[in-house]
Image 1 (cartoon, helix red, strand yellow):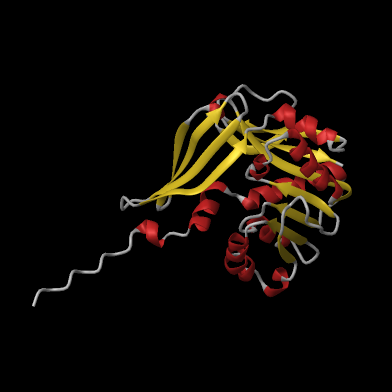
Image 2 (tube, helix red, strand yellow; image 1 turned 180 degrees about the horizontal axis):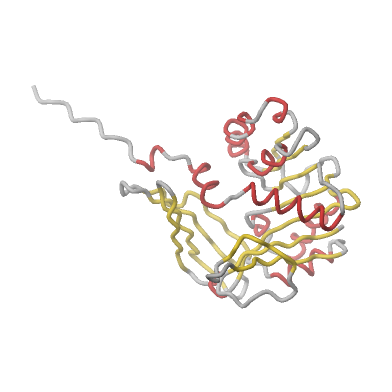
Length: 272
């Protein structure tokens, strides 16, 4: 009798979890929460306790927020049920039971959801770029304005620079895998940009198009203008500082000019 073929060993790509890979590649929620809380205290002179994370995905920032103490609460809003389920099973459930009770995940469109007024609202990872006209983006910013307490702050991030308009790939090595940011298509007339995230592994396997985004690449002056049109009193851009080698140091401070870098990431903090 002929021997049965050996069962092939699963590849690293087959064993990988794309949400875990995304968090390890893209997010640093500890830094984000520290930045938001520090900035809120500097501007408002008090502590922020109630937080809302729009386009929350796996809700890691919301989970990190409640770790600050028993008085801290968070809402995570996302329209995709599968990613909320992953966040509940893999992030919320790993919190102490008392902390779990202070995180509420809501499956909803961020433009129509209703939550109690919050101190601080964030839309990170450029997810609001999905709104590709001024009218639609202004409408969302108005919704964010109305979701805040009277002295609340709204945080968004953005990226830019000449390299942001190139069709290119950028590879970053992490422990056990390589993250590939692929700017596949860009239209200068409309600022339409289509991007993918791929993952590659040491065994040669890969996950192509683990995530795909179709966005409008908004600029800093456009965003500040639209935020003020939506009712915000002030919108300040926070620019990243540099270390002695000229690389980003992770420290963001107010800046009215910025630097002519080829590629950059910044925050905008809008004050109600």
